[in-house]
Amino acid sequence: MSLLHVSHLTKSFGGLMAVNDVSFDLEANTVMGLIGPNGAGKTTVFNLITGNYPSDAGEVVFNGESLIRQSPHAIVSRGIARTFQTIRLFPNMKVIENVLAGCHCRMQSGIFSSMFRLPGQRREEKKALEQAFKELEFVKLAHQANNKAKNLSYGNQRLLEIARALASQPKLIILDEPAGGMNAQETAELVELIKDIKQRGITVLLIEHDMSLVMRICEQIIVLEHGALIAQGSPEDVQNNPRVIEAYLGTDEE
Ligand SMILES: Nc1ncnc2c1ncn2[C@@H]1O[C@H](COP(=O)(O)OP(=O)(O)OP(=O)(O)O)[C@@H](O)[C@H]1O
Image (cartoon, rainbow, N blue to C red; front, side, top):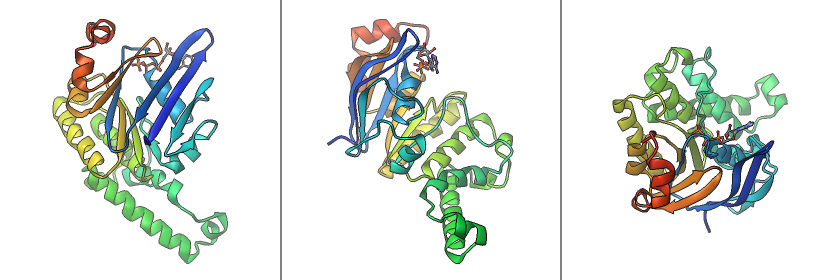
C-alpha cells in the first residue's frame, strides 16, 4: 500500500480547472518531485492534500485513511507537514519559538494544565523545547536559536520553515519550492538536507523549479500541465518524454 494515494483529484476556481482529475501514488520513503510550468496547478495539489482547500472531487488517502474534508490541523496530526512557496514564519518571534510552534500538534496538555502549569505540562514543554533544538541542529541553525526569524537570510528562513515542519514529526513532508531564492551553495546544502530527511524515514514530496535539484534528488517525478497530469516516472523517463519537453522543458524555465 502506498503512503499517499491521490485519485481523480479535481479543483476549479470559477471557470478555471486548476487541478483536473489528477491521480498518483507516493510510496513510503521516496523523494517525489511535482513539476510543471507556472500556473500548472502544483501548489493547488499541495493545498488539496494538506486540507488548505477543499477539493471538488477525488480522494486523498494517507496511510490508509481518507483526508477528504479533514482540517489542515487534523492532517498535520496525521503526519503530513508542509512548507510554503511564500515563507510563512512569525518574523518577530525567535527562531526557536517558530520551531516550537511546529511541536504544538504533538502536545497533549489541555487548557487546565496549561493555566496552572502543572508538572505534566512543564515536562511536555521541556520535551518540546528539546525536540525544537534537535530540529534546529538538524537544519544547522541551532546557533541562531535566539535570533528573530526576520533577521535570518532568505535561505535560512527556508531552512527554519523545514525545521518547523519537521518538529511536527511528520511521516510525509511537502516542500513548496524549497530552493526558491537560495544561492548555489545553499541549494547544494539543501540537497544534502533532503537526503538526510529521507534517511530519517520521512517521505518527501516537493515542487521545485530548479531542474538540476529535481533531477539530482527525486526518485519519482510527476508532471502537471494545465491542471492535468501528463507524465510520471524516473527523472530519466521524464526528461526524455516528448510531451514533457514540449510542455515544460522547452520553455524558458529550464
Ligand atoms: N485561490 C485561488 N483562487 C483563484 N485562482 C487560483 C487560486 N489558487 C490558484 N489559482 C489559479 O489556479 C491555477 C493553478 O495555480 P497554482 O498556484 O496551483 O499553480 P502552480 O503550478 O503552483 O504555479 P507556480 O509554479 O507559478 O507556483 C493558476 O491559474 C492560478 O491563478
